[in-house]
Length: 179
Length: 179
DNA sequence: TAGAACTTTCAGTAATATTTGAAAATATGA
DNA sequence: TCATATTTTCAAATATTACTGAAAGTTCTA
Image (cartoon, rainbow over all chains, first blue to last red; front, side, top):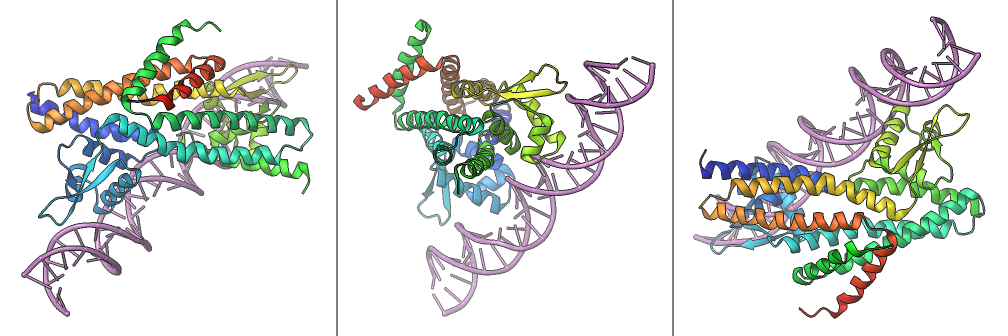
């Protein structure tokens, strides 16, 4: 097998597996595959090119491309002299990470926080053992979610350089932990 | 409405919503509901109690309880004089977090790393523009995943106290960032 | 060792999520 | 303005995932 064949099979595998991984990240398989395809494409691609490469329908390609644009992971590019839209993925891995982090915080942590605050409030007056345990647990969860929310917020607005610097410092400190 | 009614409705809502949130975390709705129920129960519960509370079948209750035990989020408790098994959830929020973090790293980051290393290797000899872009992107992603894997590993083995301490230090440093 | 208590499995069914394909809407340009 | 290119929508079809209920398996006790 030559280098080009190797590359082609690696490319196919990357797209397929990235799609499978997407599922466990709460992103649909096809959306992750479209994202994978665009991330490794040196040029922006049209809807038709995505359809052909991934063997999917127009409706499917369209929906997922626009969903990715909605996440901020993909941008629409207009080529001069061309009437159709082309799509280009954000390729900077740290930027991709911070976008996903922000989106997941918004979709997962923020609603949890609302729920927990509401539940803590509605159970603060109850006197039974069961009720007290519930109230306490809601407060613990709320406190943790607030903390996680803050950390996520900070990290997601950090540039890559400082992030690595702080992480290194953080990772370097840990082995010395005593308590 | 009195305090007990408030509490009961809050409890129902917590279980229902925690289940819905579970979906976006890649955990099945019922599994998250069982987890929610056990987290707020002062006493360990039997399979039958879970079935009754959540109105689900025996098979469903059984499967999800055992899955939670597999994750390490729930422990089996044997009561003296009782023949059946009871189930008790880990209630310490930080411990729950570290367990989930480890499990997700194992299921999501580790397989991604394997894929990326393989794809980078198989594309290192290719000369085309497309191929070089692919190889480069695989390396970038690989580097980031290794970093994320290390950070996750460290955090997941940290105790709550030191974690908050380091996070505070970290959060405190950020506003001063210049670069 | 039989029978009761409890746990586990799994084929069939139900619920949810995704995809297709074609029609409708919109934009472009001569 | 009309014809054509392109995008958008969405009802129906398909695929995926989760749940039920009952039967089979296991463990315990007398």
